[in-house]
Length: 322
Image (cartoon, rainbow, N blue to C red; front, side, top):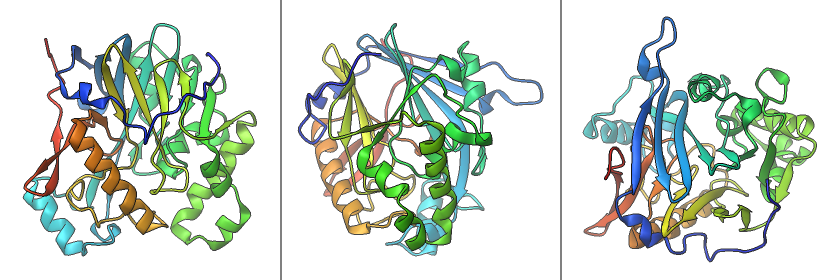
C-alpha cells in the first residue's frame, strides 16, 4: 500500500461527468453454487474503471420494517414499495453490497458487511472465495461509517477477520462511536453497533483514523459525505477519464432519491442527513455521476437523474457494454 496523500477534492464529486458515458469494459461473473445453495446466493458483478477492476459482492440482505423511515408513515413506505414491485412482508429489502477494488497492486474492500450479525448475511467470505481470495488477501478496508451492517464482518466471531489489512475510518466517526458518552446517550437499537465499533478499535489497534478528503492510493480517494453519521464518507475511484463514487448510505431503496425529506431510523442528526442528500443528489444528477450504493438492489450501480423537479434512481446499464 502506498502512503496517504493530502490531495483533496471539492465536495468529493469533481470530474464525474465522465462517468455519464457507458462503461468501457464490463461483464458479469456469477459464482458457482455451493452445495445446497442456489446460484443467486453468491452474486458477483465486475466492471472496469480505467486500470481498476471493481467487483460488486454481497454479504446478504435484511428487510427493514416500513416504520423505519422517518418522514413517511409505514403505510406510505409500503405503498411506495408496492408501486415499485418490491414489497416484502418484512419491510424494505436492504442489500449489503460490498465493493472490491483492484489495480494489480492493491486489493481494497469498501466495508465488510454485517458478517452474520443482521438478517441473512455473512456471505462475503464465500464471495471472495469465488474470486480465489480470502480475507487475508485484502490489503485495505475502507469503512464508510461504523453502523453495524458495515463493520460486523470486520469482527464477527470476536476476531480480526481482516488481520493483514489496513483499516481506514474517518476520525470523527471513530471518535463518536467509541465515546462512552455516545453509548450512554444512544437508544437500544444502536447498542449492538456501538459494541462492534469498540471491538474494531480493540482488535485493530493500528486502525487509520483519517481526516478529510484524500487519496488512499493513487486514484482511490475519500469523499466527505457526513450527515448520515458524523463521519460518513464515500470513496471515489478515477482513472483514464472514468470514475465511480461508492456512496455508502446516501441512498436507501424505495424511498430515495425522490424522498429528500425521508430519513432512516438510525440517523441521529436528521437535518444534517437531509442537507447532505440534497447536495449530493443535485450534484450527482447534474454530472451524471456513476454511483455504487450499499443498500440498493444488487449490484447497486446507477445514477441519480432529475425529471420534472424530482429525482429518481436509474440503474446503470452496466453489463456487457462494448
